[in-house]
Length: 143
Image (tube, one colour):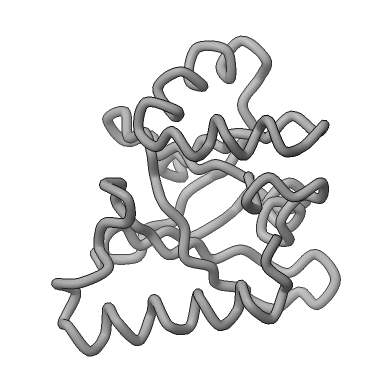
């Protein structure tokens, strides 16, 4: 599993690639749209940004996967939005939109998981690496 430092370096590299290419390179990763998710740090109260992929987009709902590559611990961004579901999302370098995050219910996850794995089979591999159930997060426009 990548270390926290390696994840931060990969996120920074992704942002630089998007900026240098004017958004032409890095808007899709493994065939999935990329997005920048901004959460509020659960300890610091400061904005925290992370680059993710969206294996499923259903109308205005964007689904992201808290996989951390199959690591046994949840990613920090997931813990942040679990504690404060008010987030901001920029999909494929588009405008930043206020959204609300909620962790998929067991029924939602059962319905969405096959679509997630169809979007990127690596997520299925990640699930086999860990005993924790990898959460799905649904991002919807804030009312």
